[in-house]
Structures are given as C-alpha cells and as structure tokens.
Image 1 (cartoon, rainbow, N blue to C red):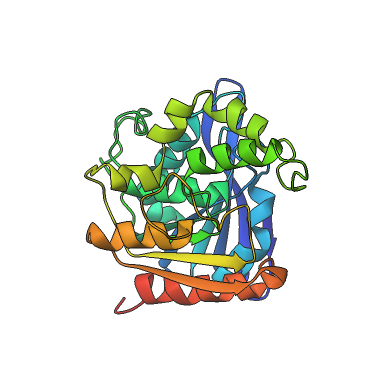
Image 2 (image 1 turned 30 degrees about the vertical axis):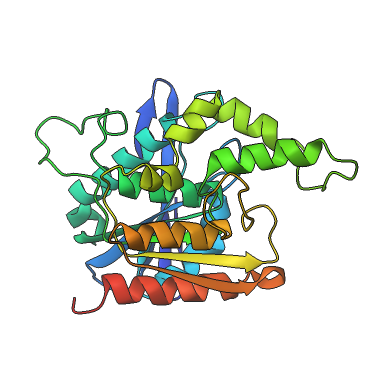
Length: 288
C-alpha cells in the first residue's frame, strides 16, 4: 500500500519473513527523485508492544525535512532478546542493499528510536557487526553490506534496562507506588528473561565496562520531568541522572553526543521531532 501526500509518500514493504510471520516497514520518502538520506525508526513499547504506526507523525516530519524514514516492525516479547536486534540489523542491511530501487543513499543511513526503541537504536548502532545480531544473511547474489550507521537519534531512551528494572521494583515496594510502575517489571521480564541479559544488552554498561563499540554522532532528546527515563541510578558511581551519565561515558569513550531537554508536556509534538530532524539533516545532508 502506498499513500501519497503533498511532500512525501508512505509505502508499506515486507522486508523479512519468520516462518509465516511477515515483518513490514513503512517507508516515508520525500517528494522528488532522490537518492535521499534515510533512517530506520524504531517504536517504543517496553519491548513488548507497539508497532510501526507509532512512528507515523515523526516520520512525516522527517520526510518533509528531506530524509527518508523506514518505520520498522520487529520481533518483541515472546521471542525475547536479542531477536529485536536481529531484525533491526537485517533491516539496516536490507535498506542499504536495496538502496537504488528505494531511491535512498546507502552511504547516508542513520537510526532513531523512542523509549525502548531508542535503546534498541543505540545498541544496534554500537554493535553493528555482532554475530548474534547479524545472524540472518541477505539473499544469495546480493553484495555484502554491514549495519553500520552514520548517526543515532534517541527520544527518551531506556538506555539502561537493568537500572530501570531495579528502580521499578524498589518503587513497587514503597507505600505510594507511582502509577507508571504498573506492570513495567513484568514487561522487562517477558522480553529480557534475566537481569544478566538486561546487563549484557545495555548501552550504558557496555561503555562503563570498556567494551569496544561503534560510536556514531548521537542525539538524546529528553522530556522533563520524566521519572521513567530521567532518574539517578543509586548503583552508579556518578552523581548524574541517566541521560548525563550516558553522555559522560559516551564522550569519555570518544563519541559525540548532544542531550537536549524539552518540556514533558509537549514531547509527543514537533517539540521532539523538530530537533531530531535538525540533527539528522546536519549529520546526513551536510555536504551531500
């Protein structure tokens, strides 16, 4: 199905199959001949729900800014970690290898995501050649490509699944448990299975443990106040909330990252999409 708007088109494309389960992406493409820089966009939902429809408003903004955006469906709860990363890694490579027919630039591909999708975006960008994530090969006869990306855009990511899980459990034990805790620990359990997995698939701890990773330029857009994503981990040696803690570690390891704060009440509007579009234009369009 293709939807035509004044400044862009949106086309649903099947990019992968798992048995009888098709995996789709929705490609938002600017008007014109291209080739266009592109991003893979990952929805949120605590790794347990949500789908590519959650990216629609954001990707329309990106397409109108001249950037193609592929909103992605991927495996989640029930399949567990690291299956989401397997699908995402494949999708990045699939877009690159089909770039000519899709009218995108294979040398200007980034990745973005919201909440748990932001976590997946960063983890995929850091480990593009991890054999666990890159386990699905492209079709025979296709040129070899990798899943490296030029930049990462994150909207209030769950950058440290383990610290948020433990925080939710601590707060559940208090007299007045915040409403946001709800079933969050169970969602973590369904996807991750163990705290060990939450620690391993963890961009924050990967840096703090000295893992050698890719570090493309990054943007973190964070609403405030946001106790779900912007908090201090009492187990951290740094007296910083998670956004600043991650930024400190990223820069220390040699990466470039900007943390931009916005009002929590407007984060679902263009207040989050506009800075993301500006960042992506700078990273993917400058000099192209």
